[in-house]
Length: 275
Picture 1: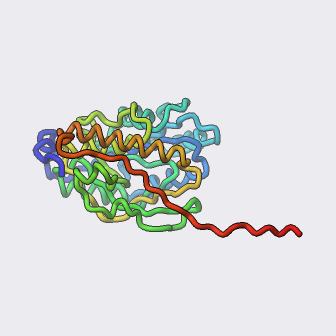
Picture 2: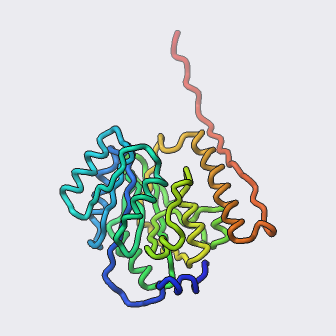
Picture 3: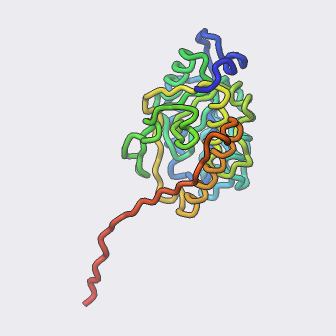
């Protein structure tokens, strides 16, 4: 766990349940096939006090037009900017800098929230006022939206030290805005895995809680991460964990080694049917 006295110092210790505005950032880039389902899942929330902060990052498939249409239909959606391919860390940092809510979270534009995601997470945070962040379980779905499996990462027990090697605080995360601001928010200089970097920095100053309910549907896409991108992501997360080790003053006690997991796949060969 993080430092609960730090959480209290930033005003996280009051226990009264109050109406709360939740700011949800939705970074968008060429997800027109899935965007309506993501935005509809926000409209379907049983907690109505939210704002959907839409940032299109230079889409060329009509995603920006879909986002604008939703903003015209419901004033809780706000199109904030975008228009150039600067990547998710830039989009998230700029979007959440404009958040007005007491809590902030992220909905990827190809994923889906369960209808009670915001209310369940808010209730959990209000029942545990010392938490700076909470995260739920998630399920994985395919491109058609069909259930695949319960996410494995969020089944790992949470510990701030274990977070150095396993990203269990995966989906769905709700963060108190004052905790988010206290650690500096998303770092736009982190090219990939900016959410992992943010969670590590939060874990060093605040308590983090796990709500064991599947509240988020994470879509597995064939084109989401290329082989080269995955190797680069491994390198980036290693560097992020190294910086966290140094911030925690643990570099003299522990050493990180870079691990790349290979998974071999056996497939039948296509038979030659030519005569």
